Amino acid sequence: MLALPKSRFAAIGLLEALGVAAGMSAGAMLPGPAIPILSQSFLVWQLIFSVFLLRRTYSLRQITGCFLVTSGVIIAVASGANEGHILSGVKLIWPVLMIASSALQAGASILKESVFVDGAKRLKGKRPDIFVVNSFGSGFQALFVFLLLPLLTNLRGIKLAELSAYLNGGAECFLNVGESLIDCGGAPFLPLLFILVNMAFNISLLNLVKMSSALVASLTATSAVPISIYILSLPLPYIPQGAKLSASFIIGGVVLLSGLILYNLPQSSKESKTD
Image (cartoon, rainbow, N blue to C red; front, side):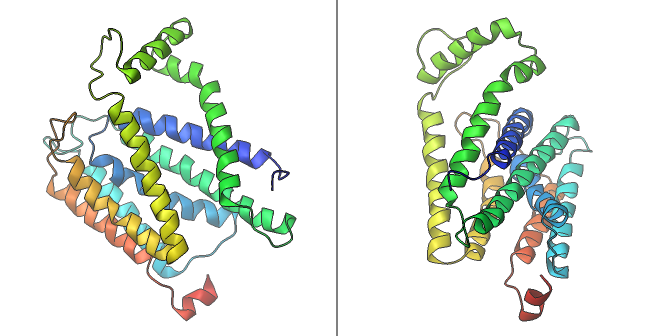
């Protein structure tokens, strides 16, 4: 497994690094409830890329589900066209950048799938271990994030000579030591809590796949969409303002969730023959 070609892992790392950079830039400018809605365009991009790159076919039900997901995202984004709605006052570039981030992440996931398919051929029917694939992908992702720092900082108006000072300031803010010009309240508790919750979430999904099926895991992850939208609309600690959900935004979320459920419904025997 360690001898598998590294070019695809490098491409996976680059796409994931660009996706993270785009997602974090957009997430800093978007209201909380909009982030899980726009991120669900991942499914649509994944379907498109798998058709062209893996030559995969999909049933009418799955295509309809993706159409509903796209419609839900459009309805949610369009809710910002009028004053007082959740995305009012937000420049169009930020929702577009968040959708582009999902496209990059979807491209990386399709490349990972191609690694499993090609690896099974190279390993005489034995599929590569998921932790080997993730480790190589994450390693290249960390490398490209480091290499892209000068470009990313330049986009944020930070000169390269000032980068070391920003890194030192970030470390002090994370450890909550020294005098910082910004509010570092909650550090290091909040960043560490995010890491722990994220790890617990991923481990729970992997365990769920092992104990039941990928379908049950997908539906469980899907249920997080309306839950996260509702939670992020509340006035939480460190997010005191909250957000008011407009009727069109809620309708968009319902349409999107319907599409996700439709896409993940069990296949009939007739559909299985066509997929």
